Image 1 (cartoon, helix red, strand yellow):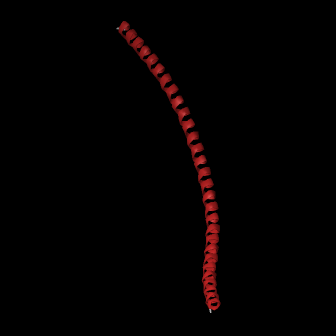
Image 2: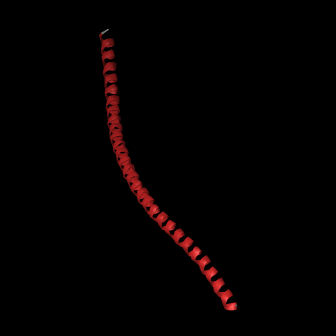
Image 3: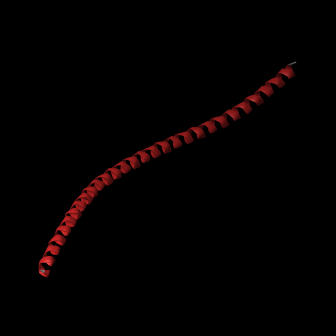
Length: 106
């Protein structure tokens, strides 16, 4: 009976050693996963910060382009007004020239 109990104790000791080894492996794996999680969290934070900076830069570029567009639209409107004035002046000059040509013929 004693040798059976001794064998059982030996088996339990071997199981404990195996469990301790597995526990050590799991702790090591957990530590590695924890570090990977920390690294990925930092990477995510960095990526989010970078994305925010890019978004802000894009907003500034868009604002600048919109302001430039307003200026160009105003310039185009001025040029169209000038063109319209020149066309009216051309019609007037043609009428005056036609009148002058008619007087010259007479």
